[in-house]
Amino acid sequence: MIEAVKYGLANYVNFNGRTGRATFWWWVLAVILAAIVASILDEGLGAGDIEPFSLLLGLALFLPHLAMAVRRLHDTGRSGWWVLIGLIPLIGLLVLIFFYVQPSNPEGEKFDPPGPAPLPPAA
Image 1 (cartoon, rainbow, N blue to C red):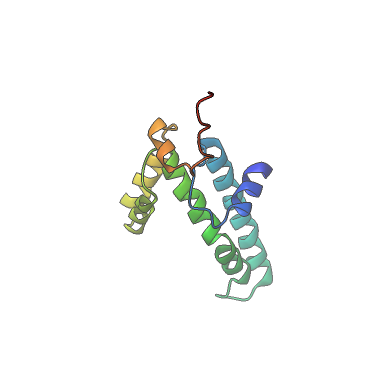
Image 2 (cartoon, rainbow, N blue to C red; image 1 turned 90 degrees about the horizontal axis):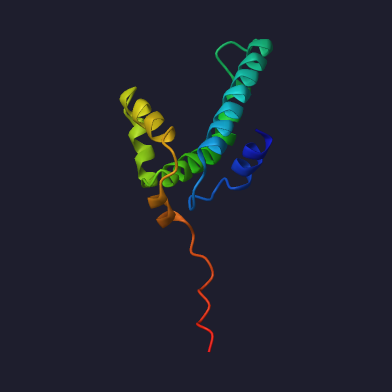
């Protein structure tokens, strides 16, 4: 899980490439655990409707989570724009979960960043 979190935070603005299924789900687990801890801290603070820890966590993890979700969609061979279907309540979330649990698709290679130029043939 630690490697997935390091990967997610290190590539927080990288919307290119792909993320494997295991890395993505370890990342999701880490985000859920962090949200639970933030919620407990907010309750302990007793500030009423203000939840500063949850708010800060949400702001800090919004971009890294979005990038991780886009790269996971790339790994399944889909465009990252599919993440916008999550804006549709319930149905969008279910569709995204269905996409996220799919195995890696070889068609996702089209989203890989270009590698070094091929070597010329030997003379």
